[in-house]
Length: 270
Image (tube, rainbow, N blue to C red; front, side, top):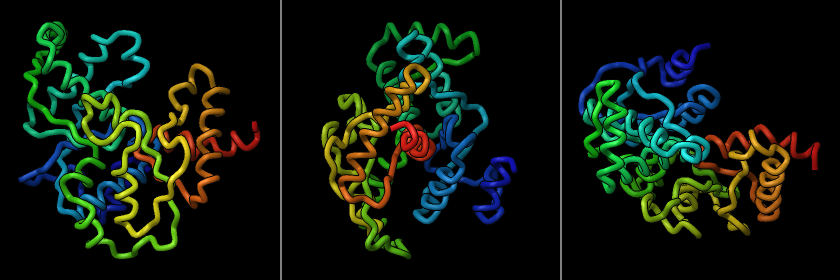
């Protein structure tokens, strides 16, 4: 079944491309969620619909791109690809809402750098001119968790919960990119963030503390050093298990994939 058919079925056969006015954000899905994790998209759409947050879509976005590999190889290429996505939002006239930590960092950091560094902006716009685009530096990028926590608020969220997650112990996994670099993301304390814990508790669950809560999941290393990547994931899972948590809540599709799909591999290997 195609993604569009899956989403329309879960959303009550609503056309996800239907026209409406007064949108709040332009939805940036990234690559991994629409191709491999449709349930994350469905959960986000249903939650935002309940909260009356309206999303517009476009087929003009491309990969964010990745804030680790591509950025490390060629920062100008990374910035140019990110700026092209920002130009799409600029043309439509809406700020961006993303569901992915990596997309969030790339797009927000790109916006920040191009706003602060005029020479870099000129270089990037020279590249963008080849596709008839020019970034003017006026797009705000937000993570869905940022919108839920800062704009909607935990009190409002608690008030619309129909089935509180009572007696469920949850370990909040923040990932690397949502709060770092802190001087750009300006979301929460990069060493000890609290917003996801508070969102979890707004749903009626108990957010349980654990040691080393800001460790990397290891996913960025899968293509370079798989053994080390799995070892990093195992270390996190050990800390989470020791905390007494029943489950993990992740903000990032790559963290989700690392823990969800690789647990059996980790169990066999270690």
